[in-house]
Image (cartoon, rainbow, N blue to C red; front, top):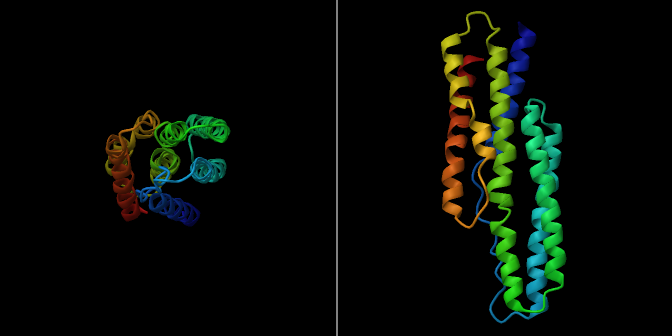
Length: 201
C-alpha cells in the first residue's frame, strides 16, 4: 500500500509540473519586419523566429520521449506532429532565405505563425496530452486504494474521456482566439481532475 501511495504521489507531482507548463503562454514576439527594415534584415528576423520554433519543437520531442504515462496512440500522433512541423519550418526557412521581395517575406512570416502555431497549439497539445493521460493513469492506480471512492474516480475518468483526441484534432490557423477557446476546455478539465485527485491520494 505504501508503494502505491508513493507511486500515486509521484504521478500527481509530475502532473502538477505538466499543468503549470501547459498554462497559456504570453504571445510570442511579432514576426512582422519593422517598418523600413531592409530585405536582408527582414529575412534574418523571420529566420530567427523560425529557429525559436524549431528549438521549441526539439524540446517537445524530448518531452514526448520521456513521458511515462502517455498513451501509445497519442505518443504517435504527437511525434508525427512535431516531426512534420520541424520539416515544414525547416523548408520555410530555406524559402525565406531565397525571397527577393519584402512582400514574400511577410507572407512567409504569416505562414510561420498561422500554419504551425507552435507556441499556442503544439506546446499545449504536448503538455496537456501528457497531463490528461497521467491523470487517467492515476485514476486506475487510486482504484486499488482501500476505501477509494469509485464513483468519484469514475466521474474524473469521465470528465477526461476523449479530451486528448479533441485536443489533437484542433488545427492551426489565423484565428488565435478560436484556438485558445478550443484548447481552454481541455486545460480546465485537466486542472479540475488534478485538484480532485490530489484530495484522494
